[in-house]
Length: 283
Image (tube, rainbow, N blue to C red; front, top):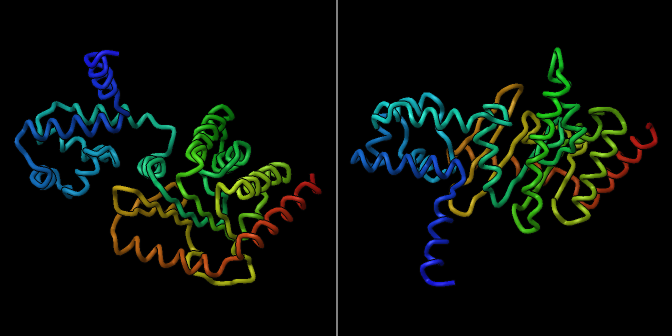
């Protein structure tokens, strides 16, 4: 290959950016063309300069009202709002979209689950049962689409090196028969397989522990090579991605206290496999 061909190949590679990276690149170009710094644009759109830096790096996406204000300040005629809407034709709930992107970029993920297997570790049938339980008038086709979209997140586990995945489950997760005995047996056996393969660390907080630091909410902590740690907490039909360093540190401390209260991994695996066997016997 000639040097010119190599240069052309490099140019082609730069032309094909992931959609969020492309959004960020175009935002940076438009901001610089307007002669504004991140600080100046942030002041105009009521948005912190650090958050704008995340937008331009493709790590975070603006809310629709943020995109509209950016268009207004930069005079881009609704361009960034339209780009955002295209990206938001989402396979995830609106409150989880930013967290899903952060999860994909994380080098370490620490989860605490109070009642359900964490979404990134769910099997398709388990996820389908979860979505079915949320709907008053369930649409089987839509529920299957949602379940497949959720379990697609498991692709991040295909890389044997990253992210580091640590899950702490309340014993409630093992004892709540989501989808029935067969679905639960499959789900728990899958978690056990991931542990045996060394792909995840998993601990269980038994009922006998009583009160502990994260018992009131699910918590996800995410670490990155080139960005500050983030946390995500979720309730019914709502979730919040947090990047305030003080709050993230407090959640990290609470997570560490819960990890100290949990069974060691070997004992957790034994409990997991025992629960799976009980479900198999009920099938």
